[in-house]
Image (cartoon, rainbow, N blue to C red; front, side, top):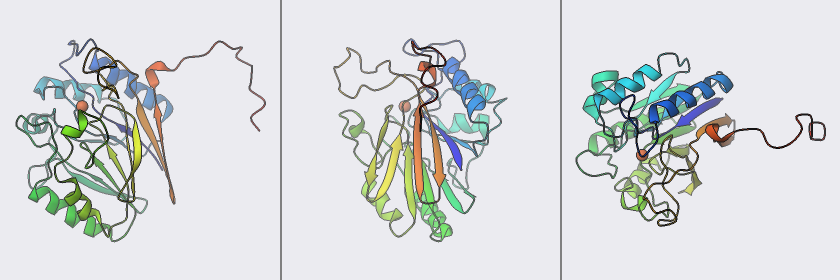
Length: 266
Ligand SMILES: [Fe+2]
């Protein structure tokens, strides 16, 4: 099975720029590249920070961009989003009013969490209602391989700024996963490519489609940096998970003859 992971679109209303970038144009380029090269993907998840300021006009711009996108899509919320404004455009709240979902495909379970805390905080929160939903959903997986998508990482990632605003009570969240067959956590929020393992569960994150966070603060004069945007292509194959991150806007030919180096790959 193959699927696509995108994150942190930070859309602003069509025609506006953010930190010098055009997030809507970048999203259109990204979706076109995914459609061209990965039309066979089973689904696509966008793991939050859909809109920079949570404006209705930004969600409408997203809706417009998605009109011709044929791959089944799951939209999630991040700390920059506004749940009420998102729902006014897309709908899809669960019984408690959150944007959480669970689906099953080929014997594997996929869970998207809503870690939007709201208010002035950029940290993540899974309150009692959301944790209760997760606990009940994990019970339904009955030991089958399970993959979790969430905007905020539930652990420190060794980044001076990001470690100020992870999911609150990440260890309590980890305790909820114990005893279930959670194979991997996909997250956003970090605006960086990250992979590793936490409590025996592998994880991955990828850059934003807009601005990035430099790994070392001060390595550029601004808080955010201009580094390649990427989307991830994930392959699940029995006991293996493989995550590629593709810098679709920085892919071009090199200085070599087009027929050079084509016959010696064995
Ligand atoms: Fe973000």
